[in-house]
Image (cartoon, rainbow, N blue to C red; front, side, top):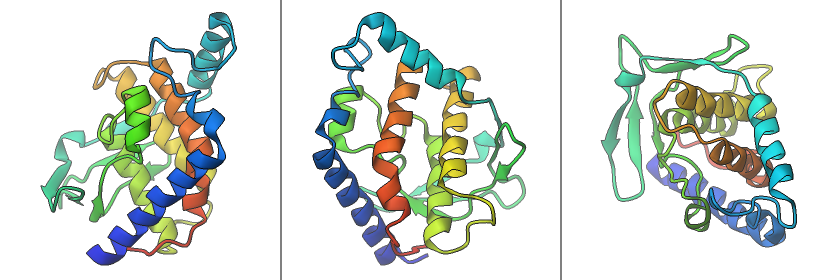
Length: 201
């Protein structure tokens, strides 16, 4: 692993997210709290319909060896994920595709401070799903992503991971948080996917 390259990649990610937020100020108002309005100007009935529609669009997968997630503290911003040598952590999505993250440096989910303040979602709120997502984005920037895996597949896998954590009872079930994460991906993730960020693995 190259810690300097990884830091540069994450700095690029955060800068692109901040720029996307500046370009899409209306998007931020969509990420209200659980008691706030998610769709400015929309009735509560329309808001709830949108939230449940997004939830129903995604299937349920299966985590394996979730208790074998080992993280080593590196500094105030990074941890090192290391797979168990015999029983590695993995996630299988509803299509049957299994993602087994390898050793990498991560900071959890791409949840900027402003988004945490608005939604209450934090970088490790859905850690196992975020690790899978971070791994696949890292593979993308290292030109090691398996053939046929594109951003749509990768982002969908993460969303199914979040839903699976909720349905398994590992975290509280919040369809509003689920909706917020999916909308954040649609607004903020594309620039980083296409950024050509350093590999860092």
